[in-house]
Length: 183
Image (cartoon, rainbow, N blue to C red; front, side, top):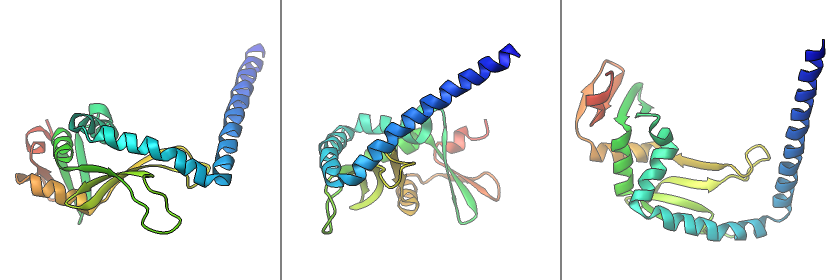
């Protein structure tokens, strides 16, 4: 009987702490909603600095390794397209992207937009990926999103990796993945 009260007490204090932290998060999001212009202006120098750091190819490769392959924990990039799985070796993907990305900041293209709110990863003059602070909802506020456009990413990889091997009817291996996959 005594143990259940202790557990309930711990759960209650944990719930209280969670509510307290959530309240702070709610307040920050409300403050952002009320002062979007100020928040976007404050973000600009940080995104410019981040783009500057990611222009270093070594640092860019490390960022790609961490963001896409969890610091080496994941070995492959697998893309499902046209009813097939396209499998690439992670280290090869990191190198290709680091070698080919041009890192820059976004620009304000329309009235009401703010420049330098995103870090863009460009290939052949078009945006292939972007990194941004989310502010679209309370749930995602202050999260960082890194997303990539699949057709453009596939074009980059296909243009740099010519070796392919059909593993089976649904799986195609590319480049270094041919040596490593299934071992």
